[in-house]
Image (tube, rainbow, N blue to C red; front, side):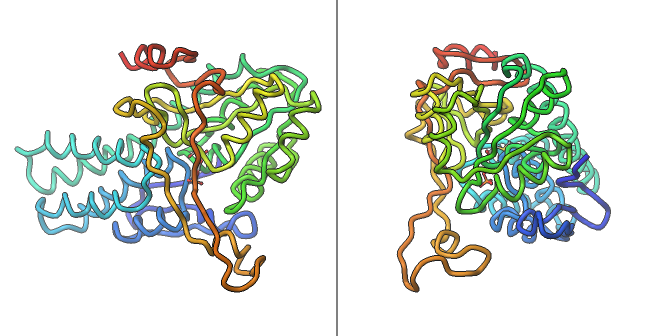
Length: 338
Ligand code: MRU
């Protein structure tokens, strides 16, 4: 199994996703500032993995801290890293609850409880993804190609993945499928990470550039689209990697089901719609350069929103560990929580 992130005595160990697939390098963060920087620079990325890193970053920060008074500032350092994936604040809130419930304990005991909670979040995530896979596998048509975008796989989680978890479970159930992965400009998560993961598992995978999605969705070859999510509003609007919205519209236009696979921790029922989801804006250099090599004239202005919002009308179903939600999402998503 691919090990995305682990808690060790030496610190938080992560596979460096900025260097895949060329190099398989593991980095060890020895304080919470290094964890925050790893999240910001996308050494670790993907909503559930960001949540786990956040929890482990807080545990690490407190392991190094002199007193409980440092807790809030450690949480704020972690919170300031990336704004869109709600799993980050979900994990911080979970660590906060443990901290609040530990007020009668010694500082050494509080630290141990926070470390145990972070380790537990990682373990739960793998089990959650396996449930998402089990719930989603029956929706995948046999003998067809599945289109995915970005990387919602083992690397984006503690293991197994959400969208790729559904694909893994469908393959394990005996379905004969192959995968088309959009390359996912500008950070190339599809080309670098999804293809790497699928090759690792011997699942047939074909790389396409993002602008080929419409062509293949029209061809009749694609049986369904499965993607992950960074935040899902209460009405079922879905924030995911930039380019997801275009794929969703093209899927509907061609009557191809569009599925979103995500854990309950990605739901943000405090938001009425996707219009309220904060969209991270990243550096222009990620667009103007590929691996440090300029692909546009010097001084080019470039926009780089890291995510877009797919309105709920394009979403055929949302696959979670607690079941599959369909429209109207305001009711079905709330039903999964209660
Ligand atoms: O910018 P990234 O690589 O963190 O974006 C990742 C995605 O958009 C994923 O699809 C999403 O986080 C779901 S991961 C299970």
